[in-house]
Image (cartoon, rainbow, N blue to C red):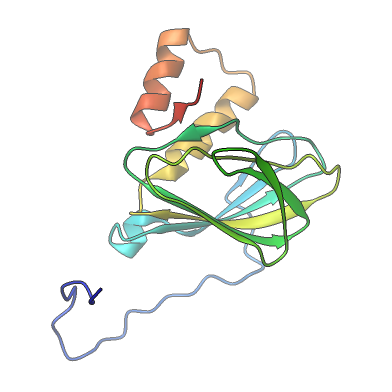
Amino acid sequence: MSYPPPLYDGDGEVSAWARPGDTAADLVYPNGNRVHYLARGEATGGLFGLYRWEFSEAVSGPDPHFHRTIAESFYVLDGEIRIHNGEEWITTRSGDFVHVPPGGLHGFRNESGATASMLLHFSPGAPREAYFEGLDRLARGEQWTPEEYDAFMAEHDNIWAE
């Protein structure tokens, strides 16, 4: 394996950016889960998206599903998070990493009754913020027809496993 083609051909530039760790969450769900948009796909030139997901004590998380256009990775920061690896639900803890290529069945949830947090990495950097925000509207009681729900999931490349 070799390096990909160059993405930059200049002599170097000042272009780094930082987000302080104590920055308020970008999204707080009714159940107390919090999402921090660490690196939006638009900010990384579409290379990746990185989010910190902080679970409250509430049991929550998506059932098994897959994506056709993006890979998703999980790095557990603290607590216990159950991740579906395509065959079964496994318990992951601080320092554990799970990578799911495009098409890979997966899901994640907090069933522990305690808080937990993880990093979610998507590659390439799809606009997942709109997906997270749509889920928030649903959680707050916005009513969608089955057709609207299906269109939303299709738009955000979320295909539920049967």
